[in-house]
Amino acid sequence: MRIFNHPWIESELFYSVKSPEEIKETPANSIVLLPTLPSSLNLAKYCQKNSVAYAIRVENIKEAIFANLLGAKYTLSSKELARELMPIAQNYLFDTQILAEIDDDSEIEEMAKVNVDGVVIK
Image 1 (cartoon, rainbow, N blue to C red):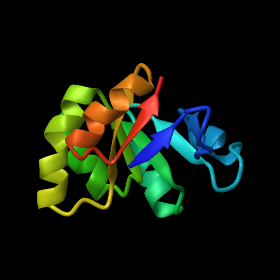
Image 2 (cartoon, rainbow, N blue to C red; image 1 turned 60 degrees about the horizontal axis):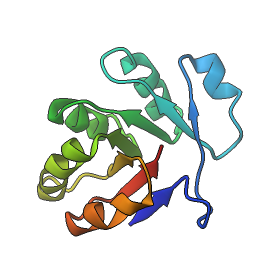
Image 3 (cartoon, rainbow, N blue to C red; image 1 turned 90 degrees about the vertical axis):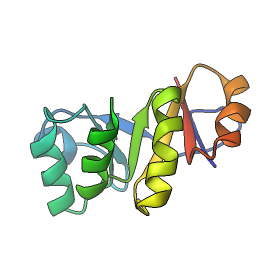
Image 4 (cartoon, rainbow, N blue to C red; image 1 turned 180 degrees about the vertical axis):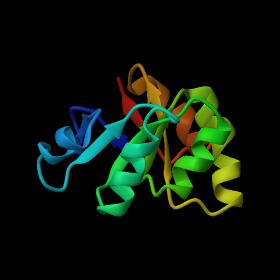
């Protein structure tokens, strides 16, 4: 399980971006964070074409499937959606890792029990 934004663990940082110019300004080897599809479709394609690692927020199963097909490294979603996505991601062998956004580390165990790939503490 991956854990992001916890004081005990060093983790990759996510940089919210809304344009290719902002992507170019992020530190090398960082993870850019895109808004939901379809508004970020062109950015996702840009990242895929230019081998830029990115995470994308998803609000439903369809968006997660497209995020995987567009080469996202991570999806960020609610706990409830992450729980629904895990069996689908495992069945279709997603390369994208499913991350649940949580309020604090007391929710880590709950997400681990349903095999979510990781959590991001808000």
